[in-house]
Amino acid sequence: MGMISEFKDFIAKGNAMDLAVGVIIGASFGAIVNSLVSDVITPALLNPALKAAQVEDLAGLKTDGGILYGKFLAAVISFLVIAFVIFLMVKGINSMKKKEEPAPAPPAGPTQEQLLAEIRDLLKK
Image (tube, rainbow, N blue to C red; front, side, top):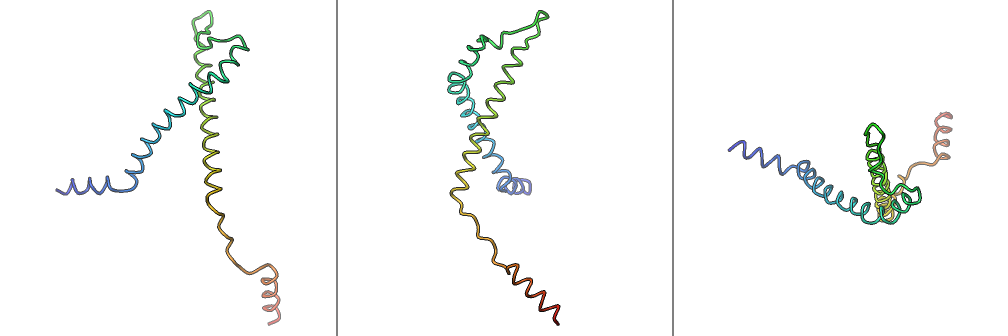
């Protein structure tokens, strides 16, 4: 019975639950970002740019030796686009958080003049 009790304590701890929630939300968020990139960003921005550069089939590019450098370039471009989209989303979420939370008031303390007056009074003594 002791192991079951320990397991319940482990599962009930915030760290395990937070991790589980984070993994589930992360997977869902990943699907949203992938859809945004593949269904919105790529057709609207990336495909026209590749057509303008006359490189519609980037992944099919290869050297005479059979090295598929086009796939590597496509993966790098995909990573950069996804990273930039995530950056923009996090930046937007952070700006919303800043607007919601009022800045805490600075702690009330003695002013510089008050501190100098105290030092002056101590030196007089």
